[in-house]
Image 1 (tube, rainbow, N blue to C red):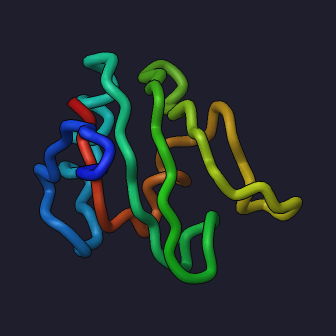
Image 2: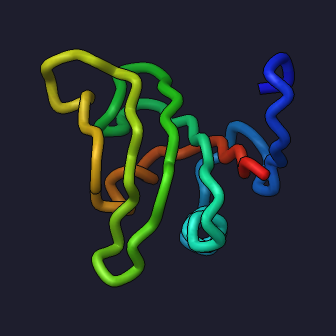
Length: 99
């Protein structure tokens, strides 16, 4: 991100499993219309090690993120589109709040 002049903060620290309150911080950031990047670790449903994904929107009525997942494989890790927010944030350890 730094090499591409993308402004961001990491308001929740790094490499810690987030609490429900911290996960709500991520949801609230998306409600402002700004995207985010998250890192998840195993046993997340999206990786067997660690993985970065972009969150582009949040629908509070359905509790879903619009997820942009760079994984292009054919297994369940490759989900993109509207995905349950609790599933996405399972094993989330980093949150980059894009400004």
